[in-house]
Image (cartoon, rainbow, N blue to C red; front, side, top):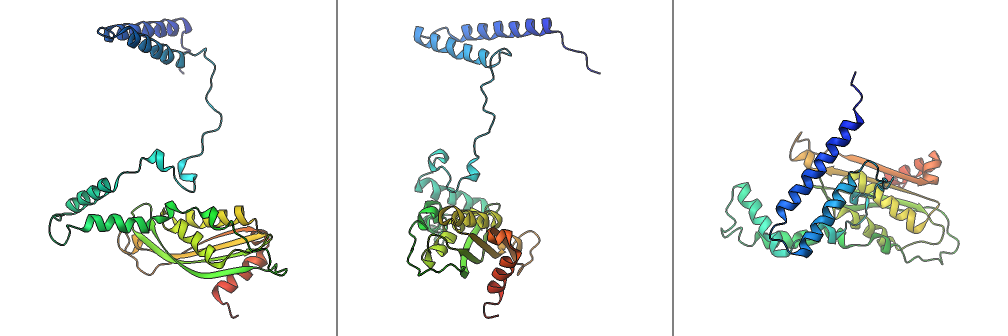
Length: 269
């Protein structure tokens, strides 16, 4: 069993450590101006106060929302590099792969890759919420489900930056009106054209539809083939991964789930 620490000894150690910090500051302050010495002293007192056991704890009880939970990462905080820096990074990868970025076939590759990335990862510059803001309310009392199936998409796995692609199927029960059918496809693109996991992408699509349209229910199914599984690792091509999200009546009523899956798999049945 551990012995209980002696509080008197601990206080002496803390005081001794504080004296050592003061001595270190004084040794570094030679040659400083008076203003610089004052700033250093304030900084030291703040450091010592932060470690004072008697000082009230001002740490918030709830941690801030992680950036990964945001629909669009904070580009300013990430410090987006310039086009020239991005092209230089591609040249570095070409050299690392074992090729010569100055040879004729590769000399323009960095510029082409950066241009392609602007389109491939264009979802970071798309506001998915804004895509659904315009609603058509004059639908003559229509209140049944709206389903858009077989929406093709191309995305990239955030773990290996290798593509995965497939189809998305979306259904919702409108309450305030309906949105243009192309808008649902654009919402899929807004999240697919980012570094993603299929599970996160499926949830993000459902979250956006639920929060903006506020339907009685929505259902999202995504089925895709991941090249990170076909090209590398286990190297099994043709394997399909299916993810779903059910909200509202689609979550509470199993019959609605069956109806959704039936229309997706056999629309004429």
